[in-house]
Amino acid sequence: MTLLNDCSSKVALITGAATGIGRSCAQKLAEAGASVIASDIDLEGLQKTVALITEAGGKARACEQDVAQESVWQNIIADIKAQEGALHVLVNNAGIAIGASILEMSLDDWRRQSAINLDGVFLGCKYAIPLMADSGAGSIINISSVAGLRGAAGLAGYCATKGGVRLLSKSVASECAAAELPIRCNSVHPGIIDTDIWGREIAGIAANNPEMMAEGGNRIDINLVAAGVPGGKAGHPDDIANGVVYLASDASSYVNGSELVIDYAMTAR
Image (tube, rainbow, N blue to C red; front, side, top):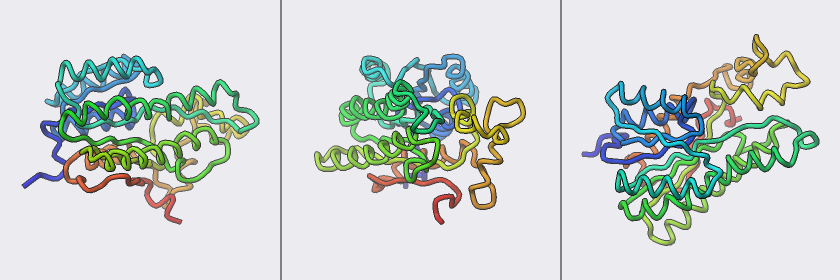
């Protein structure tokens, strides 16, 4: 009998694995038995992720990767084929959030966000599928957002990319099924999760609302954002990673083209 969420003998690539949801996904997949390739542009954070996994007895290695670069995707997939000989799980997690209104957002920022959040997912699917097919089976898990299900003022660009990830995932699932490839593709839609994404550029949505900023002024106060969640509850990266491990495992073998919303009923109303 197959153990629930067992990922032993699987090789998994997780992008954006230096912090937050990506790091938790890498750790949880390793705990479930997968051999993990963790990628990111943040090498320092990436090395910490790998250290946390190996110190806990898991198997992981780091790969520097800019997901918006096609040649980098080609190289990393070729490297996985050469070193691991297979790829069974791809978690397209890397992403950024730029907070700005339509009137204020520059075309450069729009394109940069789209390149990472949407182009990166497209490239990951495109280059992972052949190796997954050769490996016997595969599961592609694309991290979208509740922002991919409904719009939000000040986040039009982010919502557009995450909505694109949602429908891209369904299209990939449909194409693979039609071609009789043993590859599933699903999207995950986190709600308000306490990660570093609430700092840096997303703080632009609070430029005219300084009361939204946490003490120190370098990130949005997560408690204020979580007020929109029933019970005012913000999630933890592990809450998302647990869902990802399920989708990576054979326990979800008939789940394909679906969207897993993990938001504590935020979008249920």
